[in-house]
Image (cartoon, rainbow, N blue to C red; front, side, top):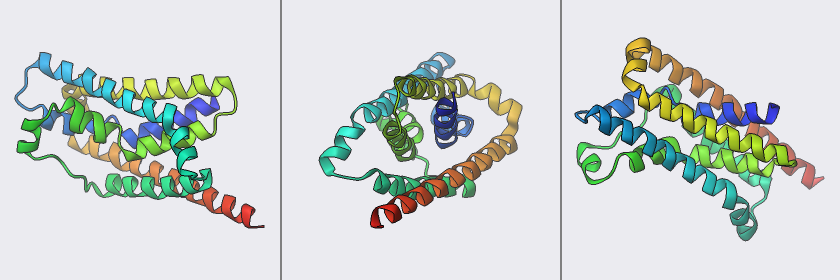
Length: 201
């Protein structure tokens, strides 16, 4: 249960389902309700598939490139810190109207990189490295699925959530998520430094 909660909270604050609401509304502006619902579940499935793919093959990539877990933790921590700063400052890039017209927004940019972005991928690979029991596999799978469902629900009921939370509420949740994510990032960097220090002794 502890492993599940850690993975779920980490992925939840990185992906930030409530924070995707205004972006989803903007990217699907002018679409019918039926189309919005279809794009919502497509984006969630794409994000889930991308994260699962890295969870399954991330270890193979690490072994092939001979990258140590400590290095991955350090790089992941720095990357998550950048993501947290974007959440805290609100400085995120949104696709232009011409870019939206060329692609299915459920795949790009909703599915990836807004949902299954670098932060979520690195965090998932780090948790895979911490698996030492079959139950950890189940816990991580449930965490990934749970966050994907949360993202789908946020997009599925985006208009309702936006009306309830208002712009200020969504902004507040985004800032809180950024603060939690920054703490997680610092912890990863500290663990990486301690691991390298232990190897040097």
